[in-house]
Image (tube, rainbow, N blue to C red; front, side, top):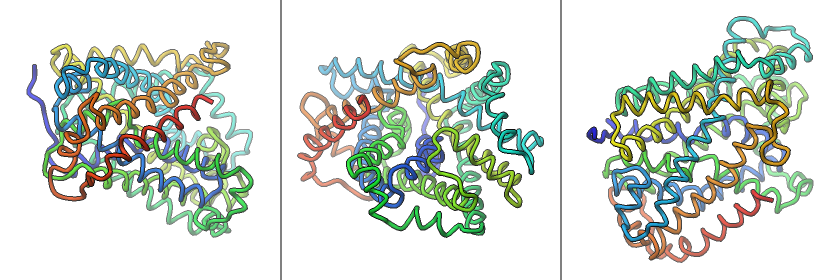
Length: 452
């Protein structure tokens, strides 16, 4: 078995962890659910739940990884050899990584495809709404086009991860995250200059109780809790494997706060791009999946300098989605190395083939297999997303909480010791009742809400 690598720097760990958390959900899902559930009040609820739920669970994944220096199943075995039931969750968590990549690679490919369409002039100024709309429909109808961009995403992702943690994952993510942060700031500043941009910013950042009354307080709070929880990519042990590479120089609450701050900065700044643009051109920001591929391209083709903005926006989206792909691929490769004793090269090649084949149903689900419905009326992508988002992620996070806070797993004292090792923010021992009782109840409510 190859010697376990580590990050070359704290910055590398922070950016890779943030890159894992920062994804399509920050830029697509966050703005449209904000628009749907009350604007500024939703943002406030989101920040509260991020602090009381997201950060604690993230430290648990980091703690399990850093204490064991192993991937999830082996980590459970090392930290409590008697708690065999938890090891079964390790297998489910890794399965969740595979299922996530079965559709996420396709969606990530869409981002790259749209960036290229703006670059090559397939989307250009003066196009009608119907012309812009037809571009997305034509792409979905073409298994060859979708398959090409999916395969390119998969192959490039495994090539990068095959180079190792420092030379591949860390080096590439540092570049992408630097470019991502620069791009999002440029785009936000440009949105401020649009006509009527202030109305969009007002809706986004100025609380108006009337907006909450339209959707209901309970619905808005539930949606905010859901968004805060899922935006961090916690529950499938991807953060756990990143924790296994980190140093003990800083406390885990300190690192989790920094990662969450970066993730939140991107999500909030994405709103500063989208809400002013929507207000300026009189379109709704709660348009769901069509917001990115139909609504915003229609805005860009009618905006002064919009084609350049379109290129930059979808380049930003490509970096955001690809950074998540890299982190999940690294978890899959590392698990294969730890569990089966494979070399990094062998684990990379084998898993590249597996993901390529497993991603084909999602590609075909919009054309040749468009009549296929797996879970209820859901198509292939929605069925795969339901399994990950509504079951594997929240249940996995609940299991991490039980493992780290009760005697049935690792135990709160052991978790707290690992959590507070290093310099920086520390958790107080007085939080034990919150971790043991309140946090599991909140997660259970979230799971029930997701199923309903």
